Amino acid sequence: MKALVVYESLYGNTAAIGEVIATSLRTHGLEVDAGPISKVSPTSAVGVDLLVVGGPTHAHGMSKSSTRKTAVDDKKNSFPEPTVEPGLREWLTGLPPVPTRVACYEVLSLAAVVATLVGVRRHRPDLALPWYLLAAARAVNVAGT
Ligand SMILES: Cc1cc2nc3c(=O)[nH]c(=O)nc-3n(C[C@H](O)[C@H](O)[C@H](O)COP(=O)(O)O)c2cc1C
Image 1: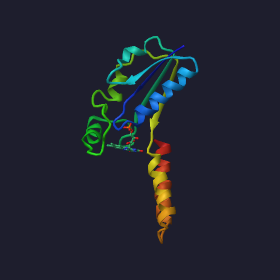
Image 2: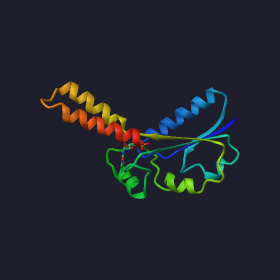
Image 3: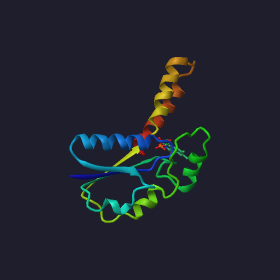
Image 4: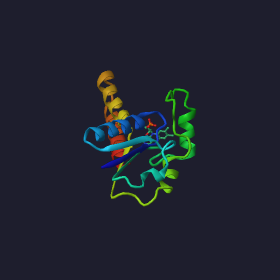
């Protein structure tokens, strides 16, 4: 059984997850090709049994040129191979008729929720409720996205 794992990644997290998924599929006996969408043509999906596509959440949806630029211009971003063009949105439009099983994953900012909860426990602010509400709202947003 053949699988193709592709991902768009600006900071490296989705790439790391994609590679972990690829490794895991290989340990389960699948023949797997994996890589960033900048290096894998949509036509590579022809003939695969399983296509796994991953991308980050940007502004409550898939990335755009402008949001990718924000991430690329981020001076704190040290990921050496950010996906600039095409984005996943554009890559998907070039996809030929797809296999029967398509798995999508999204990297979500659950870290912000965890960081808020840890921060409240560590710093014990006088008013903790607003922070919990903020974390809850963020968690709902992540789940919904
Ligand atoms: C311009 C921009 C907009 C973002 N918007 C959202 C968002 O709406 N919701 C969210 O949960 N995370 C958002 N994020 C955080 C990304 O989802 C997070 O950085 C992601 O884990 C990065 O994946 P990557 O390392 O593969 O690029 C945004 C990040 C950027 C740079």
